[in-house]
Length: 338
Image: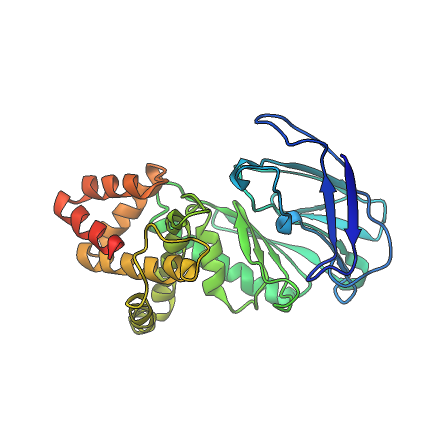
């Protein structure tokens, strides 16, 4: 390390900045440790919840040519007996934790230390029919609600597009924090950080679907291979639970928005229409493909996309042609460019 600074007044969170003496070359590693102690403060240690949220997800890493080159290992331990670390990946409470990236990613798994004596946050473990869901929550009733929803989501996904690669274990950190303090709900197979109200089972379905849909360059609109498929999986679950009428209402809204958007591919991922393209137009295009193929063939196509670990739109089109025909591939490619 060359130097560091800590800005307690930075918004939205107090910010630690670390400067290295030189840029890291490919394959080179560096290590450093951070020791934090002090009174609860807004942002880093939220007094209302009695949580220490050590979450480097908001780090900016200019030393890397692309954030996708960043791999990490984080080791943390506690010297305060009142607190325990929540290991969401393993679904356990402990005094020490080690978090390692499964794949190169700029999303970093959060480390949360909870003062269990103050907030009552506990681990609720449920097993049924060979499936297990562990929920970290302050609220027993919410934990049961999230558990039941996760089990239903497993049953639906494992019987459809995930039938060749079923998942039977999930760990959920349920922390419904006000949006202005923590807006991130996300997944790291086989765990989910769930920051919305427990009845929002659609969002939970979206995040669990990322156990399978996690592909495509996230710095381009190729990320539609992750987010559009996850969004459409969420919609399929809504149709399964709430019926065709509710599903068609969602499609109708997406259709109106999609008409006003530029082509899905080739746009600026972080531009004006970036999120709308992958969260609205992409799912709408997938609904058109399902209408063209029929439900069973469409689900077979999704199974094949997972089986072949598709990571580019070009490869996706090849799989679609193998599963259907050259004419359908051409029709779908035109939709992506329209």
